[in-house]
Amino acid sequence: MPYHKRGRGHGERVFKIYQKNVTFIENPLILNYIKQVGDKITSQIDSKPFDFNFYIIKDAGYNAFAAPGGHIFLNSGLFEAMDAEEELAGILAHEIAHVTCRHISQRLMKQTKIQLATLAGIAAGILLGSSGSSEAAAAVMQGAAAAGASATLAYSREDEKQADQIGIQYLEKSGYTGAGLISVLKKIRERLWFTPDEVPTYLMTHPGVDERIVYISSSIKDIKPTSDIKNNDFEMANIGIKAIYGDKTQAEKEIRLQLQKNHNSPAANYGYAVVLEKEGKKDKAEAYLKKALAQKPFDPYILKKYGILLFDKGNYKEADKIIENVNSIMPEDPDGLFYMGRLKLILNNAERGVAILQKLTGKYPEYKQAHYYLAKGYSQIGNIADSHYNLGIHYKNKKNKKNAEFHLQKALEAEKDPEKRKDIEKIIEEINPPSIIFRKP
Image 1 (cartoon, rainbow, N blue to C red):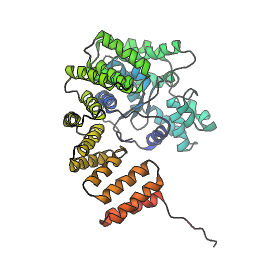
Image 2 (cartoon, rainbow, N blue to C red):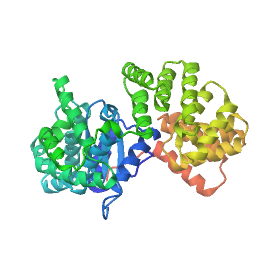
Image 3 (cartoon, rainbow, N blue to C red):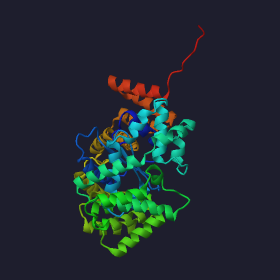
Image 4 (tube, rainbow, N blue to C red):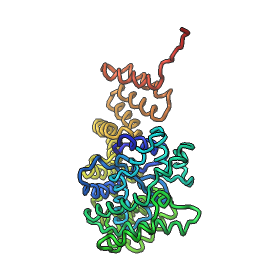
């Protein structure tokens, strides 16, 4: 994952298991917004023990959970169901409080008779939802040991009450009312009524929701309707996740309703353009992006979508102007760097294109598709060694061993720098390790 720092200890082990068993959403529009709200809350914590990281899991289920080491996870389905930033803040503050109270890490430490790797699997399974309704949870729960230890690792009602108490303090210090936590808990509870065969994972991992709603209602100072606490950033991220990752039919229906309420909404016009583009209706999508830009002409995410759409339509000069504007606002945005680099190659500015794509692969090494275009750029400027090297990395990432080794060998033949040669030889050896011959003593 290119956009996050990793934690240590138990948190690192649990995190690695999530990486293997769930799909993370890496869209900067959505991630940056979630991080913005999360950072606003964590800034109220005195003497933070570590940096907090926030993740979105592509999963329609209603769930949110925390792992040791400051990792906070939110399912896309739960975020889609939210109506205001207050609700997001309420859920995040509660999970942040679980981390600062060390609820999971303390339980992990008590399980001294179980191997750490097994404990990490158990914790991951519990937090993802261990009822068996989640394929990811079933995949990470590890045998009989998991069944025996899961009860002692799950949150207790006391944990939930403490996390609510501390979470409300964080919310009030951050300028939120806490009302959003009540409204989102009610949505999770209502999901159970409408889908009796599928218990929301959140209800299994966070017990006593009805008690919590009563307790929180009596604890917060001023309860205001969460619909009064909206902003453009929330609407852009919420509509964005529906349009890009949600059910296409449902997303189109909901966004059309938003447009009927406010045909000038930048977020709704942006979201509808995304839906239309997915249907192959590029001209109509462009029209709605222009409507969105008429209201928010400097929004980098709308501009980026517009620039990429123009790129796909072959309007490279206009796309170049738009993506340059995006880069001036968000100079570290990986998608912006990727398309700007490609545009420079197309528009015969290969040296700048190579420099941009080098920056991208250096800062975001897992943005793997960049290596193919970096190879093309090096070829344009006559650097054969680096062209073959990047093609080798491209095929290595695609697990095409034959082509990877071919291009890396070509790179080795053309490369004169001794240090670079050593690096290439090391990668070739990783791809094709030498045979180990066992001899009798």
